[in-house]
Length: 405
Image 1 (cartoon, one colour):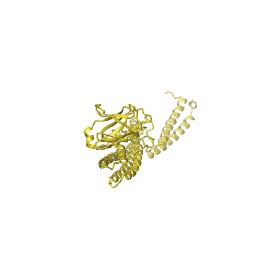
Image 2 (spheres, rainbow, N blue to C red):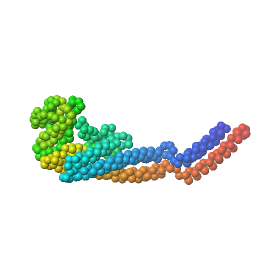
Image 3 (cartoon, helix red, strand yellow):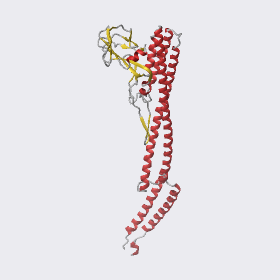
Image 4 (cartoon, rainbow, N blue to C red):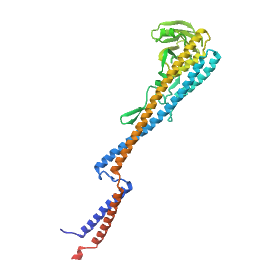
């Protein structure tokens, strides 16, 4: 076999380059702390490292979701606690109003505080989070949940949605509540009603219908569950009909603003000046919102009648108000209990995720972490080998075949 001078040079350079590359790799392992730098170093370990890193990223996202849900739930729990305190105060005022020695003026003073508590309650129910979304609107985060209708009564404008957050591959947690479920769909002890004006009314300014009051429960129960429609045939007369059947309950009734209208055991007023074609409705219901309960309490306090029948109706109103406030408190406590259970679940899940994260990092470290003692020793050997290669190359390059000719 023929050996040329060029081959001597090439073999020497290749040896130096190989050792230099190995040394650079070892130095990079030491600087990064990882022994698997490319998939070519260990294809099996590289695949597993990639999987573990993905698991860590998913775990991190779950922990962020838990942090977000935890903040929302704690905010709602604090909010429900504040609402519960207001409801408790309203209950105290209702009990006070039942004192038989109080006159209409005294009850008017109580009505002033109840009105203030109603505004406070509405403000709490319309609370927003740090991002400006309403907490109790369901999916309608940009819609104020409790708004006044044309007659000044609060109605729910959100939906029944609840937002869920995934905290584990197969576990989701509700991070929000809706106001309808907690504060609107509250069971009442007796059949009741609510009033509303038709959105198609044309009077300017618009005429309103008051919240109304139960005067004779038995008489209303005999009509329940039908609804009533008050239709103005002129500016001074109206008819009352059964909304579903069209049966006339009262025809050609004279109208005067703010005069009490009594029909089928209930009382209400229409304020302002309606015009022919305007309509108002009395709708039956088995449920009554918290704000509606307070509105009816205010109406009863403001329209107290000191007669025997009036006192009986007022006493029945107070009893019903207490029952409904108690039901609202129960609804609030149930919601807080559910939130507490979710918070406990989040805490447990978060601890599990942290344990999984710790174990995953340990496995990942075993796969990709460099053994510094071994790497330093290898680097020393590689340095010695490189120096030997340089020395050999120096001696080889000083030789020439021409010296043998």
